[in-house]
Image (tube, rainbow, N blue to C red; front, side, top):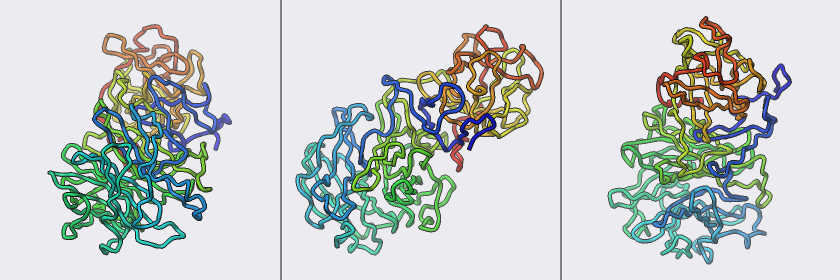
Length: 522
């Protein structure tokens, strides 16, 4: 799809954007080409994917020295001809959460209670040992029972000693006995599990080698697998995957989240629906879903960095990096920031789609303004920055106008790292942009769907008097009211910095992030 200038046109789902992200398009001016690439800033940013070609179902834990350890699936989905190449749970390590090195395999030999692929590991440090729950399932050409096994090691790099199956499909009516996730609560060990036949939780024995059937209960419906459980601010959060994981680029995997004040539920999603009510015929509110480059994100885990920021590790497909394993597109290792709304809901990757580039974990890269919704007023006229006539189309003009209460006069201001912001209109969900990426004095400001280019990125610079200037990253020029007008409807343009009042802006805070079902942060 192209606009009237013949430039390729993007909607907000066709590119990558994230709280804490600094992304640049391939063109310095005008619209980007169809391929979006990231700027290189090794000092403050990392790029997804983190590791490939194949690392599905990642789980993560940190040791006492500060080293991160990640474990993933590596399985043969063909006809068994590559069986000898199947890794028995690959292990990665990292000192910073975004640069990963392959260490080896968790097992010296295949667990023997069912001959099949080992997948969906879950790692924790518990009672002085590294504890791994893993799924073992018959491959398409084999027979046997789906189930969850237990292995332990004194060190995170193994080798892990197998303790065999602790739970299988024949043990209970629920079925779907894979994708375990371990939780210790008030000194008692529990295990969550399930795959499209309900998500369940049960108490484990003290040695973790068996479960207590009398404690079994269901916490989510048949729409889900790939559970991750996380506790924060008095809530238990149930992160689950739904859709198809393994159909290559046509896969529909995504992440939904429910929460409860009790470990045992009920878990309700942001719409207020009990997750027990979701099955194969309906879906809840996606908190992480695909975009035009990255397909089928899901089945992840949560880590917290040294600054107390939370990060979601997961797998997804990269359409631009088409690695294959056993003639099937590879699922690769991703990381994205988890922000929390003021009413305690997680917001993954800013717009709920995988990011291409983000500010590194543990980085002390912060902006001069907190992320949130603001009215932006000109110091000279006192009038507000708005989209003309409350327009919602690409290319609509940006001007000044007296306060009318219109959502077109409110802007989502989001720090994307490296001193740069994106500024998105609340009414249209389009970003503040410079016409055709111009670098000329007097070029009009407009709105455009977020395509990550430098003409959509702004430095918010303190002037020392409580006001700020908006400096365009592409042109280096600042937002200015044409001819220093004080009239309603006066055009807002870019111009060299003169220090005049018509180039100075104040930010009136309205509210913090509030996600909606369509992914908008309000």
